[in-house]
Length: 222
Image (cartoon, rainbow, N blue to C red):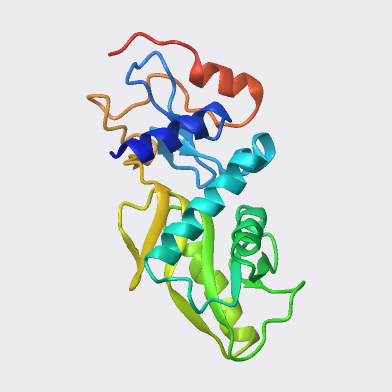
């Protein structure tokens, strides 16, 4: 891990957006929104909520990196998904003096997204942005929504605060992110840290002050 990445992880930790399991089984693991369990967690919404100035700095840093790599020369609009990338994509666009837009789920299943508050024009180049990339499923749905809205093309890169997908690419596009943690994810009964796969303690969600206090208190290393 580079010093830059370490610095960003620390900054995200300080605003309660990043957590990594300390290795002690006295500390519970995290249950993700998917129902799976993990030894790490990133919540881009907490950066937006607790330190918007840090989010602006993150957007600026990624925009500069993308420009220096030749990825933002022709972008005309930055797009992301509600809720995670709504503000992040707007900050990216503002920093590059571009347009922005965000897609919203059609219903509670979040199987389909649509652009309701912006008119995507034919011929635009769209730069895809996300706060956290895990499987890339949401970004793919935003891309599909944009293709339904207009005849567009896409910048050859995806920008993200955190890439926990385990891959440097999303399809054919490289992922440019500030942090790239190697988190493990597993189903109930398949804990890789215990001999029988069972959870020593019930996994907890990383939301709420009480749960966050449990996860971040001092634990003796394993």
